[in-house]
Image 1 (cartoon, helix red, strand yellow):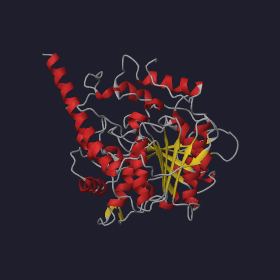
Image 2 (cartoon, rainbow, N blue to C red):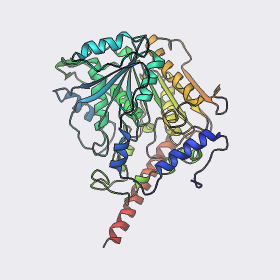
Image 3 (cartoon, rainbow, N blue to C red):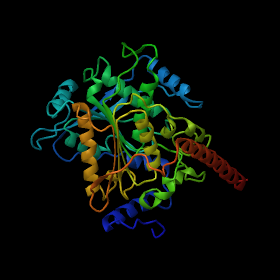
Image 4 (cartoon, helix red, strand yellow):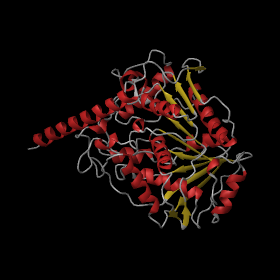
Length: 455
């Protein structure tokens, strides 16, 4: 605990909360990846007057959307990857009840009626398509209920929370395929679905951390497939371009998964991870990790980090993207998230960037910080943006807005999105490529030493 860096401006509650999480993440002996994954998906009960409806979005019988995703991946850069099969996507629908606590009755046999009741209590037509974080191998809609229920309550809309396939059992791009299928299933539902077709203008993408990466990857798919030939999806003809949602709102976006940019050193004092323990070949083994053949990253091989659907800071084309809202702490991932915001803003996309002074990655989900002033401010901004995208309130507003929320008073002050100290896009590409090569080289050296020591 004494070796952890400490921010000079944290109060005692913040210090204790972050120290506790750091100690848990870096505990000894380290648990297996299986153990961490099982810990992370547990059910957290809903607190308050909410509707909750579990559902399953069936996979389409046609293979067209799967092949379209593979063509998009191949068209964006050279990469070797596994071709996942299509799979059903479990989801949870959540909305706030209009009056009183009442009884949270069990879902009936008629899901269409249940979903209609869930919608009737909403204050607006907003549907937030939420994708949870967790480094691609942790989390579930059940464990994220405190966040999704808060978004439903503050926005007045519905939240549909997606359970995508987790790594390392299901590597890139299985999770992207699941989120893509979920989005298209809202627009073009199967005949057995509990909901009818949803207008994309009523949908806003929302998520945190790895979930944000998956959502931005789906946006890239929509941008890259404008001229694709029509496909079949649930027996319906789907023509391109497929309409994007009305906005995307993401907290703590890891735009640079390679951990290459300056914020990985500058902001260590504020964040939760001091290193990634499972990057080392001698990490405790279990049936799902280490991989065979071994690799340093749970989500994909290191060479894949040079692809723009893995490292979003390398994605160059954002023109036509709906309004973007990005919030970040002064965290390790800040530079990568800001690089995405900067590129999009230069291509006339409506961008809102808000950074919270001295706060760590995904701080509204950190035990002890959930009820902090900063978390309250962030959740309100997050929900308001989602609602404003659907209400049309962003029309005519300042196209690019950047601000910083102070730690001591949680007051928001305007700032410039572009700063002289920001690395250029060429420098970003150079740093990421150099780091990927280095990590791959060091991992192979450690692997060889481990093999030799066993001889």
